[in-house]
Amino acid sequence: MVEQIELNKLFWHSRRGMLELDVLLVPFSQDVFPTLSPEDRELYWRLLGCEDQDMFGWFMERSESEDPELQRMVRIILDRVQPK
Image (cartoon, rainbow, N blue to C red; front, side, top):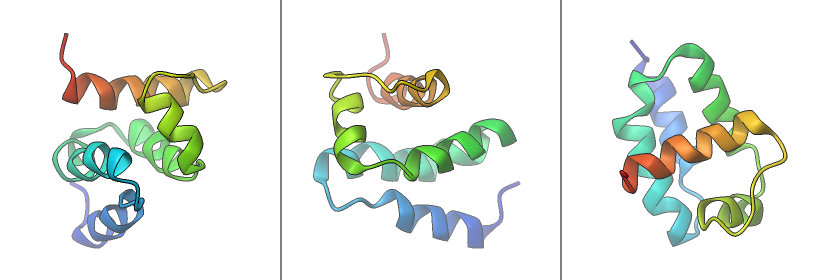
């Protein structure tokens, strides 16, 4: 189980100040992150270390990350809000 302190920290790091990112990342951090494997949790933290403009392009599907693992996390997040 993910500790509440980590979830609180994650919540604040997921708030980016860009509405398009906030509506994806904040609910994901609250609803899905606790259920992720430890490896995917680490990957989500890596994603949060990326530049907002890069993430914006990835989430708007205008570009893709050169890192296939980061792109996989982007896809996980998008699939959560855009189930196919």
